[in-house]
Length: 236
Image (cartoon, rainbow, N blue to C red; front, side, top):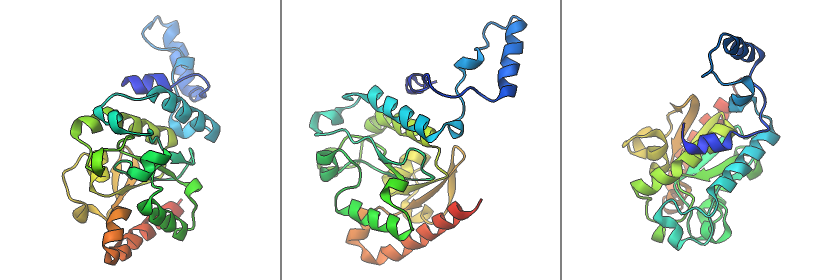
């Protein structure tokens, strides 16, 4: 298990289901010393309460600290961790902070972020109802795409955020987010509008709001994608 996962599975989480606990205790009575005790086994994120998820995210942020795991820290103003509802059913993932995000320490607050907020509101939601994060937490110089080593250093924290929040649907905004989360070289134009799956979670790739600011004619396809997301969220 990655060190991130070990540290963020801390005290305060619920015991596993009774049948698993009983199985572990029984194994211990048989002399299976390598079997962990029930209290040491964390539950799935879906079993965490909203308060426990918020606590786990806060602990993860503390673990990141003044992150210097890659070279991006040299030019940043603020680390941009993520924002929103820790128990969100819908999560948006972008590529990385831009200038405004770097200055304010919050994802998607510039012009593209304002458009994303309008999209969220058109879906009948508020920003505080969803969770928003990025592949990397520090701004790449001149808003370039993050390099593979930068992604490798940072994406485990995104994975842990997703694991904690356990959203029902993730919307990947743009090629960089889609390719790095899904581990694909496919272009966004080929996969957008089609649900795929990542670790049991439904993922909808679509165009980045910054792309829509330059190509207003693509707003309609993105809205069609969001209607599919709303339909998936409404299904029990």
